[in-house]
Length: 186
Image (cartoon, rainbow, N blue to C red; front, side):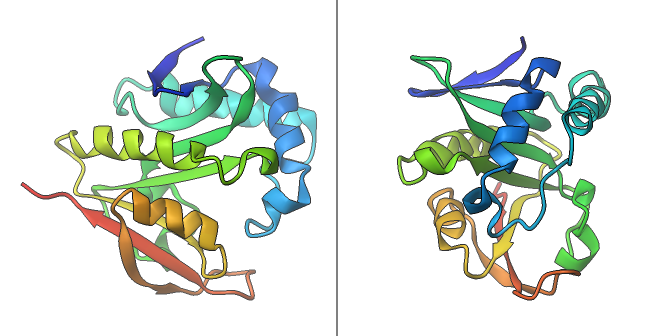
């Protein structure tokens, strides 16, 4: 199991095939999907295929930053799976065109079990990922996007230093998205 980083309360690690049921359980929670729309997969096999694709695209890709990928977030003390983070080239996002993302921008995202919302986990890991991504030479900006009513997610972005950067129309969503950005300085 590859550990990316640790914070005071979290361990971020690469997903393994054994995580497929954990991802399926996370996406089965209607509260979690309220602002996302649909799960990442519709079967256990679909989640296994998603994890295998992560290995090829990010974890084993020597051209990719070692920070890029989807990262399982576990509570350090207990090993309990809490959710995940993503850090990737912004152009990998399926709505990159609509969001007007550009080369050199890095997207951050997260998804956590409803039971741990409001405990600061999303912010804790996201702040460390943002800090590390900004240290990379190729990073020009950190970007993220959430639906305008998803105030919990946008608060995390703001706590990481990102600022609102415009609204976005997302295909298939009735609600507009709001793009956040943090430009790299110096």
